[in-house]
Structure formats: C-alpha cells, structure tokens
Length: 182
Image (cartoon, rainbow, N blue to C red; front, side):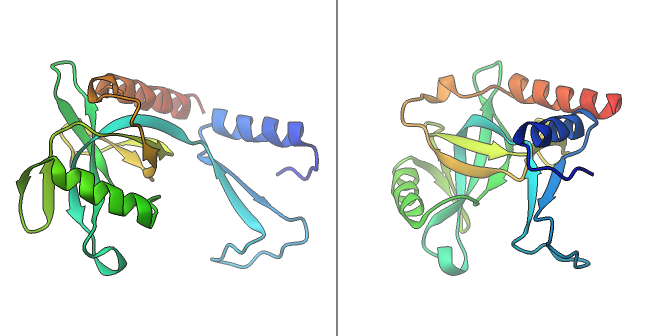
C-alpha cells in the first residue's frame, strides 16, 4: 500500500508491483470509500499495456448495435513460413466510423463467407493493445492475447511487416519468467 502525491513514488511502486508478477495496481482517491464488489469513479485499475501490429484474417458480423457491420476481428501474427497464426479475436476499441470503414474494406477483400464470418485476404494491419499473453489450446499457436482492443489500422504497414508469432511467444516467455521470479 502506498499513499502519495509524488508521481515518481507512484511509478516506482507500480514498477515494483509488475516486477513481483502482479498485473498492475489499483489507484484511488484517498477519501474514496471502499464498497465491496464495486469500483466507483474514484478507483482506477492501472495495468501494463503492450501493442502489436497484427493482420486481420477474418471478421464476424456484429450483433445488436453493431448489426450490419463486420465487427469481431480475427487477428493473426506472421509465422516463419510466411503464413499467419491466429491469436484471438476482438471487437473492442472501435468507433462507428472505424466499423463502417472496415466493413467496406474487409468486404472488398473477402475470399470466403459463411453466415457469421467473412474470411479476407490477409492485407490489413491493425495495431492491437492488450494486457497479457496467455496459454490457449483454442488457437493454433497455443497462445492468445488477453483483453485485446483495437487502437487503429496501420495503412503505413504491409502484412509482411506485421509482428511475428515468435515476437508474441517471446512476450509470453518474459511474462512467465517475471511470474516465476516473483
């Protein structure tokens, strides 16, 4: 526990929490009451965030408010053979403008469709923020991104410049080493 108004002390406390294998820290106003099972506006979860440039492999049609838009992106990292390894899906972080744009762009790149999913040529690179990498038997690479969200598309990058599965595996290994050392 730390009570401080000094940014350097807070940063050192946060760094130590990460070094010990914690996901992050909770910050709150000194006078904010504790309410079991609730986090009010006076409480803030501060966690490590990573980013990767990944390739969109497919997208699923949205539901509810996102109906009619390609929303849930299937994300892939480059593999050594030149293909792509799926690491997970996300629909978080997108604005209506982004959904409209990506629906148009992904539909133009469609190579296969079924009732729920449009598979596309792996050409569009998207910057993805995430908190951690976790083991996952659900995906071919054996790992998946935790709390993935879209930061934006990368029109300045080609798919062959996207991050590799080896980069993601290295992040996972670092994460496991930190946890073991804690």
